[in-house]
Image (tube, rainbow, N blue to C red; front, side, top):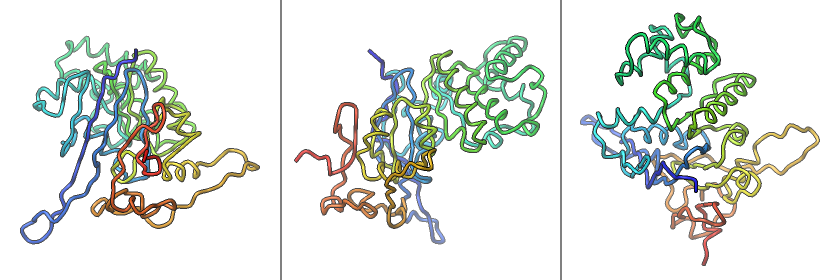
Length: 324
């Protein structure tokens, strides 16, 4: 039986809106609003949605790079939301992150060798000679050479910098990697190389991924299951083949209809959503999507749908599939 080793329950992250002379709290931005999912050991869970839907905030909250407002996060059966900063630092040996912008996440004043050594120094792993050897191993694993160790981040291309970021994430032999749009800033040909690298590393080191992206074709290529977010909420979750062939939520259907198909003679119906995405500081009552949904019912405007299983392994938060 495949082990579920990462569990997220009712995760929330609200950012206060302050105003006035005294800086009083006047409201909150609901960046992540009651999100629940799990990740099985060895799988890749893709997380997709429009810009601003809360994907990246979710990823950062899972590692407590930003503190969650509420919710429970457990890793290999151990709850991490209540850990102290020192305990969390030790836990991060098993949980690492790859950021969207590789140049912004690398210290421009440090050589690649120093960048890759830093996690080992922080966690007290090895002496200087052992760390140098580990740096060479990491560079080799991601397709670079020892020659690159003495160079600085600005001397590399975008794809090479992302390889360095991946090498840094691997330095401590983690079990889980959260990849926050790791290829969105790269050229298409380089994207393919980095995606293939991530898949090869997953097989070699038995890694588990949470892969955050807005590019649906990229997510389809690398993921085992896919979750769709809208306005801070998880609205659909299923295996990728099921989700892409039989999307159930009206938002997921619209999202997938916008994916270009590489055949000029192929015609498909495009679902055009009306209106703009509501502000996360003023989320509509009931279903957050009801202001743009063509299938809206009266209950959608007042009752928030729960994420329920509508088929084997297929979860959807929509009143259209409620069993009445």
